[in-house]
Length: 344
Image 1: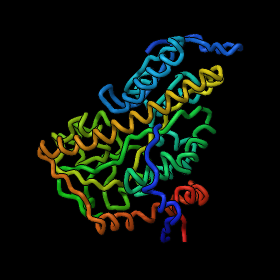
Image 2: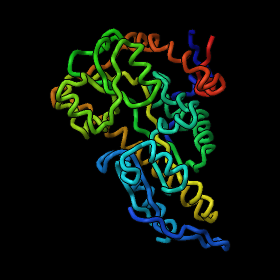
Image 3: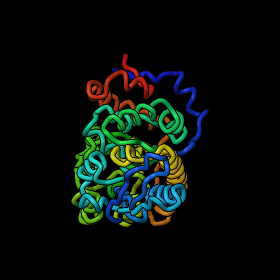
């Protein structure tokens, strides 16, 4: 099937800009008189303390604590600590209200709603400006929030893990054929695994904590990630090539458990919503600023950084087109259309 982008949505790409987005749980019951409840809240996120994700968590905690005059405090847990390191368990914990606040990739929710694969389909977004217009401040973002909330949480904002680059120790990647025969670590996100298979690569699913050693020992040839985890894990020490191909944009969802949300007074709900907006805006800014410095740092440490031409990028998009047809039933034409993609 050939894809056709909706002209109206694409014309809006350059118009919009980003507007932003422990301890034990305490008594979080809200007062009926509107004075609000109080308690120590638990906030979980997936990455390390040095990740830009932490910016969102700290801003969320700050605004909540200030906005409620200290009635609510927020204890932050990195690395899925509350879930024993398991992302699937961490997702379940925010859904069942075991955790009060949470920041995680939209990919973690695709198990519960496959339509959310639309966000991370290969080459769905081309640039930060495209993401801003169609997702973070556009109709696709509204749809994502609606569908995640239908799972039983309150969405406080959308942040970003950013565009994912591909690295390897073998050769420069400029065409789909360049991936053929190489073994890449890929997260357990079905459409990403399928994309690497389509390009002739051997995708291997493993936890990120194992990646450095696997690359160092030659068990795998490469991996794909946004720049933040690549640099924080010092993968440039065991990788020689990086291609900026923007093959997938990784969106983060900042949520409040429905249990906590329902307990809040209207005044406190307004505080939490403002905190979510400030947190997401701060994290997006930090993420994009970090990208610029990260590419420079990797190059200074000996990596070859490859930027694709428009023609080279189009070759990847054309090669990935069959993935859209294979996920058409799971995602639905109506959802694809909101994202600006139609089938002929």
